[in-house]
Every structure is written in structure tokens, then in C-alpha cells.
Image (cartoon, rainbow, N blue to C red; front, top):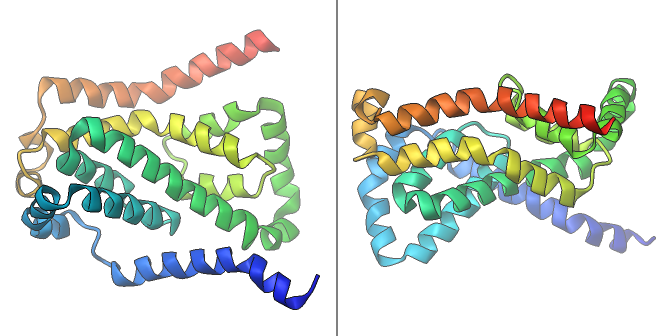
Length: 234
């Protein structure tokens, strides 16, 4: 393989790193509730004039932000609900979160995967065996562990032989319940300013309280169902 061909194969990875780095640089320190409060009226104005442009820009920003493994996905999902409502905000946030997770996954697999495997291959072998034994259920279960950082799951899965297609649909499905909570909450907000000043008590309706309880219980119920399903297969 010629040197020029090698560079051509690296171009997508280089572009990805530059794009994510640009987002991290220009929006550093901007992803806070107060920042969105300051721009809330402007965002709503842009939505009324160019809704498609705002929607596309929001999805791209969400995906790049999470792909950079930066915190704040929950806040972005909440803003999606406020700006676009539940019907549009939920699929937008879900797809964007999955895109971001996939970007981190690809970075892990193609940029620093060989470096990590060379040094921690013995530890990763256990993950490979679990993935081979449980298949997509293993990733689904990891997404349901409350204390498991979102970005760590993305990186870890990038170091395994799981197929990209499988990683995509399992991630999208497993992140949907949490997305429902945040987007629904955002869709019920009178304004982001009220949330910033008064906290969750300003929007804690009976329906929202049930949603919070459901999301808290869901990981445990889902993990129990998965364990029962796997036991019947074995």
C-alpha cells in the first residue's frame, strides 16, 4: 500500500477528530442550563423562522458533543423537548445520542483501539468472552447499569469485535427510556428560566413524577427480564 493511499484512508478519521475538536473548542463551557436560558428566546425565534435549520444544527451539535465524550447529554435531551416537543424532540435526541455514541465507538476502534489492546488485552479478553456469550444483551445490560458512565461504555465496546450495525440498534433501543424522561420533562417546561430559578419542583406534575419512578425502576425490571430470557435460552 502506497503512502498516499494510507493518507486517504485516514482522512475520515482526521476529519472526525477536527470536527469534534472544533465543537469542543468553540462551545467549551457553554453547555449549562444558564447558557440555554440566556439564548432561549433567540432559539425559539430561530425555530419559528427556520425550524429545519435549527433541528439539523441541534442534532449535529448533540452528536458531536456526545461523540467528544463531554457531559451534558441529559440537558441536551431536555432542551430538545423544550424546543421541539415530545413527538419531534424524542426521535431527534435519540438519534443524535446514538450518533454521538457511535462516533466515540469508532474513535475507540480505529484511533486508539490498538494502543489500548496492546496494554490491556488480558482484561479486555474477559469482555470479549462475555460479549460472545451474551451477544447484544451484554451491551443492552451495560446501558442499563446506572453507575456505568455513558462514554466508558462507548469506548469499551469500540475495543470489542461487536458489529457496528448491532452496536447502533442496541444503543438506540437501550437509551430510549431515559430519553423519554428528559425530553418529556423539557416538553412540559413553561420556560428554561423557570427551571433554572425554581428547580424541578416547578414542573413536578403527577405524570412527571410517575415518569421519574418508571425510569428509576426500569433498569432493574429490564435486567431481570433479560436474565430470565437468557436463562430460558440456556
